[in-house]
Amino acid sequence: MADLRVTTRNARFQEWAALLVNRTKRQRSGEFLVQGVRPITMAVRSGWEIRELLYDADVRLSTWARETIAATSARRYAVAGELMAELGGKEDGRPELLAVVGQPEDDLGRIPVSPELLVVVFDRPTSPGNIGTVIRSADALGAHGVIVTGHAADIYDPKCVRASTGSLFAVPVVRAASHRPVLDWLAAVRSNGVDARLVGTDEHGDIDITEYDFTEPTVLVVGNETAGLSGAWRQACDHLLRIPMVGSASSLNAATAASIAMYECLRQRRLSRYTSGAVG
Image 1 (cartoon, rainbow, N blue to C red):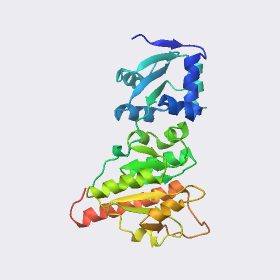
Image 2: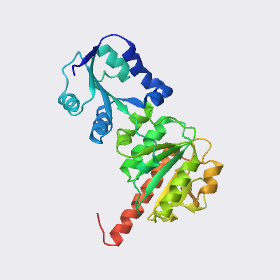
Image 3: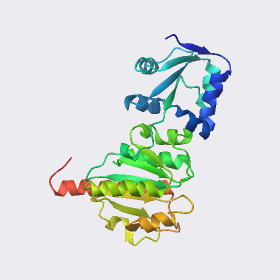
Image 4: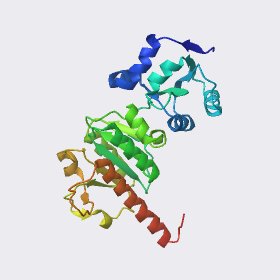
């Protein structure tokens, strides 16, 4: 199939531009626009559906761009440089490659379940940047999935995708309308022999985070940036964990709290493997 050329702000360009700013458009089309070398590379490497690739028609493409284009069967568009600059949204230069990527189903079954389960639930987050940061930390610290619940920012917002630095494509991230589907999923996990504990982070929690046994399968719930955990999640949690703090700060950023908890889980599990002789 021959590459299509876009040199004006035609209807196709307007559709791409809408993917950057219009959540409803992303939801209805089931796709989103991906910017950046690492996110695009991770999307291709992780086997996501690459529907379209847009490349700068006015420059000689790098080896990376040419290889990425060759690695997919996506429809290709040669786009005028000034239009690529608008879609790239970068002040330090225009991108040579952008990707339109299909959204996977919001299916909790995408999350792999094992006796070492660690899943992070982010309850009603309002900041796409915070969601991206949690996803990035989940990838780096060994979590098996991230669940975003309730009325929340969009996980496919460009700010979230950029903040995740490509980890969105490496860790299953699933949206759930409320706490109920997650609790039903957790009940099924437990009935299949993985006795996962449900714990939340809270500044007034009953257990210090260092005293909780993270070597057990765990579902960790982090609350909204302003309001914290909802009443429904508080009631559902087996324990509420607090992060010891000094100084005048009364609380931590939600993404920071989630990252600290995930690191404590990783630390305990690595220590447990070391002391049991299973170093690795």
